[in-house]
Length: 419
Image 1 (tube, rainbow, N blue to C red):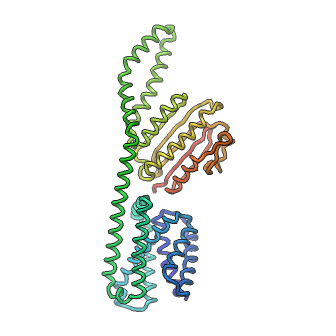
Image 2 (image 1 turned 90 degrees about the horizontal axis):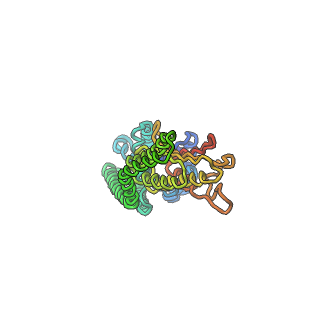
Image 3 (image 1 turned 90 degrees about the vertical axis):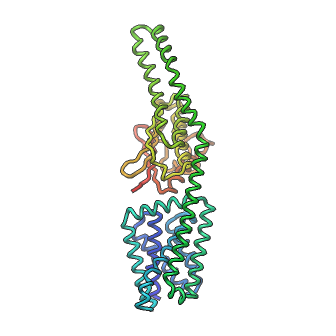
């Protein structure tokens, strides 16, 4: 019983730790060891009761779900993929070990020790595990129906293999190499198929977004062209200022007029350098909206900051909700300085989206509840769900939200650690 528990613990550690690496979770070694101990105890009990191996998989999935509080679908996908990788890694040493011993316990200790060491080494090779984790994260963004098909397919592979291992072990032991090739080929084929599907879905989403925002882009281009043709109007306006303004005030009046026009022109012209059509369109629409309410709107946008983290719809949801929240705050009668600023940039391997705006009565803002579903600082009878949706999206991508209030200004800093 003790030997079986130790073997189960070694295998559970490899599976759990590899899943943690793929999921890019940051957990203490104590939590990992505790989860391994708990899962190994249940696994050993199930084996002693001679229950089906499927019961062990169910316990693993439920245990990881409860301990690490991940989405059930993500846990199942990650566990099945990790389990298949571990199965292949367990078979590889068998090619050599079978030639020296046929003792099940000795084989088990050697195989599990090799895998544990391999997983630990893999966790220390930052570039490799970061690349694989990124690919895995991208893979998980695929359509839910596709993921369900993936779960069913890989689940079938595992059940068939375990059935063969339990009842036709001799055949597998004598054909280890062929077994490895078959399982590896099945996994690689499925990954290639799903990777292709992911790319097709992403391309369709991009085309859909392009079509959706194409009218706004055309509007931006037309406005830039229009403002180029407005030069004659500017000239006539300056002549009018000279004719109607006192001589001593002419210089100040002309400078103010030119300065106001230059500021707006710069803001419009800067839009063409924003590559992401969603961000460009949202900035343009809000710029026109804020202008009607005499809101001073500034933006600094770097390219290729959020694109590899959030989907187009997620960027739209997050940015629109934050800007709407800022707008609702600065249009209050009590707000004397109507300023809103957006910054998107990379700094020290961290991607940032920052929204700043003046806040009325910042002491009334409950920072602990601001992302709670239904929380609102507006009149009674209104409900705020926008910021809760923002938090849900950011959390799903392992991002962070930091809120500060400085000089009567509320600052939302959304950031993702890319290191």
